[in-house]
Image 1 (tube, rainbow, N blue to C red):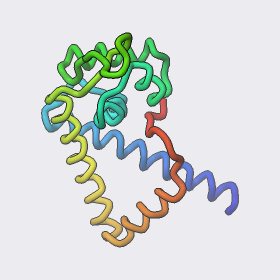
Image 2: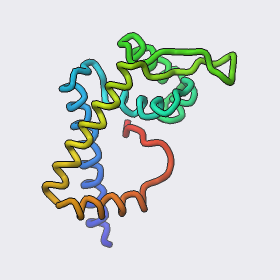
Image 3: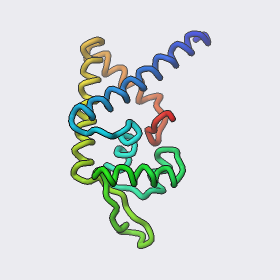
Image 4: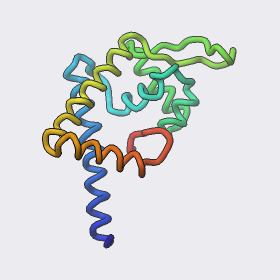
Length: 148
């Protein structure tokens, strides 16, 4: 592959990723969850399984503990998360999604489904399946984080 093709592919992948994040965000807002930013969705994805400490969240997002703490403070004020005692560490607090946070996460999943559904309309279900297979094969393991 020539450098110009590699650059064009890089630009296309980044454009699709940015558009996907923006359209999911718009779908979340349209479903009744205003006042959030796309970065909140990346945090909710980390919190969804079983909660996380602020330190865990900072590592997941690739930010400082102070930045993660500010983000948690913000979404806590908005009713999306709450802090609980950590079951395995008396010194730590576990940040978990509230029912509002879970509802927002479900709204994001619905919005993602709509976006990918439009891809299937444009490319066909089979091609979207192939795209998924290929991207999974080359995607790095680890957290999916915003491109700050």
